[in-house]
Image (cartoon, rainbow, N blue to C red; front, side, top):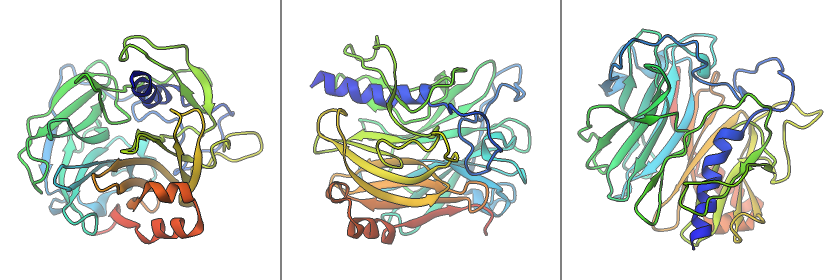
Length: 361
């Protein structure tokens, strides 16, 4: 089973390093901002580390209420052992600016105790209020011991660092949070992976200046100590986060844009994030079946998924970060991915629920 585990770890890690657009830069689209680093090295940095503030019930405040948000996106999802859903994303408040370049961005944490029917924003994380520093790329995660973590990135003091807060009981709507602390250097664009030996694998990333294209693959057979040379592209894809994870059946689930062999950045096609589609692999990623369309629209991106013990797959993603500012969720099952028919797609759409909509009361 060891090669299976390391292949999954490799696919989780390497694409975060490798995704870059190969085409020449085009006129920017606020909701198709592929390959933009939220911290481009120009953000001001204080001389010393200052822990960010934790703001409870942000919608009850003037500065962090949804109505003031001008851009929202980059969500992630976790489900507690008791079934409570946790979603996190980051929002900005600068009119006319895309979320990645918004200088006043902060993390929002929301939770649902009824399977996603209703949501409550319980926390905002912000390093300096109205100042120029930002918190971004958040990831809630339930560790192997059942504790709830929220990881996020801060661009200071000298390098980008992943920070974390922790709650002992993720089944509570408003748990007691630990003080924020840095955990390692480098942004975390996907949640950690718990390995069978008890180690936690953190897939940090660094953007490369080369024009690499598609989803890359690298394999480790020693628990992540060494990796094979990067193969790019292993799968065609635009410069946008995708999801890959192992299901209870042992199969791999991949959610990406368009069909498995289609690349929206190829010649003659516009840069678009559209048609989030689910695929399954029974042979460790060598071949893929299915093709269930989860969101057919232009402007959908950054899927994140967790499977619960009853087999339900919960997915969160964003739609039109600078216009609609929607954070959405839906549910589906593995057999729906295999069927990949109109009926399964209709169920996914029927199950769609709104987690948050920036710019609204």
